[in-house]
Amino acid sequence: MSSPVPNVRDVSRTTLPNGLRIITETMTHVRSISMGIWIGTGARRETVEQNGVSHFIEHMLFKGTTNRSAEDIARVVDSTGGNLDAYTSKELVSYNTKVIDDHLRLGFDVLADLVLRPLFEPNDIEKEKGVILEELKMEVDNPEYLVHETFFSHFWKKHALGRSILGTKASIGSFETGMLRSYYGEVYVPANIVVTAAGRLEHSAIVDLVAEYFGSLPSGSPAPDDFPPETNPPLILKSKRSLEQVHLCIGVPALPMAHPKRYGCYVLSTILGGGMSSRLFQNVREKNGLAYSIFTELNLYRDSGCLAVYSGTSTEHVKKVVGMV
Image 1 (cartoon, rainbow, N blue to C red):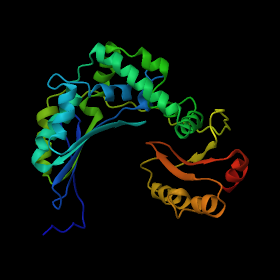
Image 2: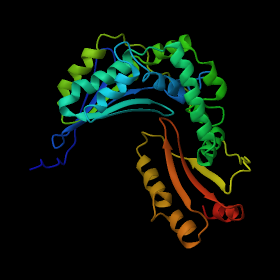
Image 3: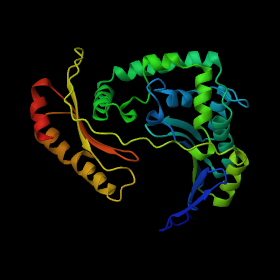
């Protein structure tokens, strides 16, 4: 017989003496544990010359550590039935795993190994440049990706939030061992790290485990504050003759991530374009047949945000779709 789901969330927080923050949620009704190590970096922290370095380092951490080869990293969590993943966004990098509670130590050992002991071998760096450049080409060939990148690069013009997470061909090509190690050493420090865990766990046990791996490290410096982005409202046209559709993105400023009224933005986004019952989907697609894909997306950051509408439609219907939006 399964345990009842509690009505009150059991969330605990601890900060180690070196500044590393730990947040857990105990969920006694499940058998699994999800864990994440979150680094306060991303496109926003990078200079123009560094653009894409956070994403590149995320890739490199899976290329091997002083304890495990790349193949060992891939196999060790898979062999337990768990999963291991990572991603980079504008303001953070996440390394995360999900395992059965019996494999808590193993799962965290792999995460900590990735974050603490990367190799940054020159041969691996050169190979990964090719991989990420192909990823960039693949995304540029995707009109939905391209219209979003074009939109944000002008919506937050001259600000790091407007830059690509992947970087550019020039910036990626310039990455080398010394530069990667320097950026890693500056950013991957306890003052800039949050460890989270949720599932069948005890907060004190997680704190002890994290302290075992990270507690002796020097604090380092947290990510510096920068200036909030200013919104620019231009109309940008980009021609790609091989496409059958016009892809468009229209957006307005939204509230920051921690604003007390941010939930209203989520409600508005859902009403406008959050699903098949949303107003844009019903009016643009169902009632008028002007587009197959139309939706809203909400991008909230620490001091700014954007509510955007995306659609793909035929050339003759663009004006009408824009008017309905």
